[in-house]
Image (tube, rainbow, N blue to C red; front, side, top):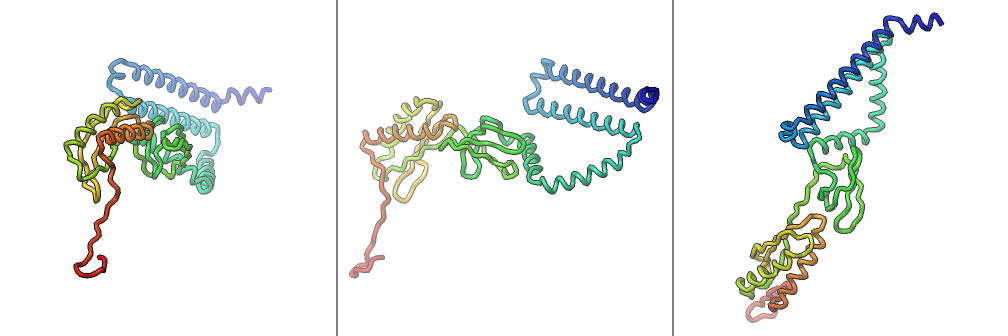
Length: 270
């Protein structure tokens, strides 16, 4: 029992306890000061979400660094060879890194996605040929719900080299015959934009006019604004509305056409 109390009141143990208490008090004061700073009215108005997140992340890094340094100091005070321990951890980390390199790549890319703001949960994004809504995100994986099919797609973060945020606007293209007067088509499609703009979730609809001279048709364009996850539904209803207006005006959608020429005086086709 006497030996036990001697160990308890030894200088090494007392120094370790004082160091831990001092570090705990320092972290408590630091956290209180950071919290008070972020909640000041003038700071709230000046900081955006991204900057506030980075400040909090820096605070977490500082707290982690203090904990690690205190742990190393306590081990050193109590006669544990920290250098040998760190060397052993380094070898073990190298072995684990080789075995878990794919997981490490996922974690690193997940951190990059957060810091560079590739997307946030709720965004509609385009990944390769998939357009989907981000429904889940971790440092390892990203889950998308395909807005066209409803399929759930899980992507390892290491495979994400780029991601496109889908705009809330899309263009409806209507190929119409060269024979129809542009003024007539302009009037019909401008009028059709009124009911298209009243489709559920559509917030704006603008007629852009002729946008392309194709091989067998002039392509007229209508710009529609709606939430990207509702794009396919809005596009179907907008096509139906535009087609109905064109039929009432007796304007048809042209079929692909080809001109065939024969040489004079022969039956040989060119």
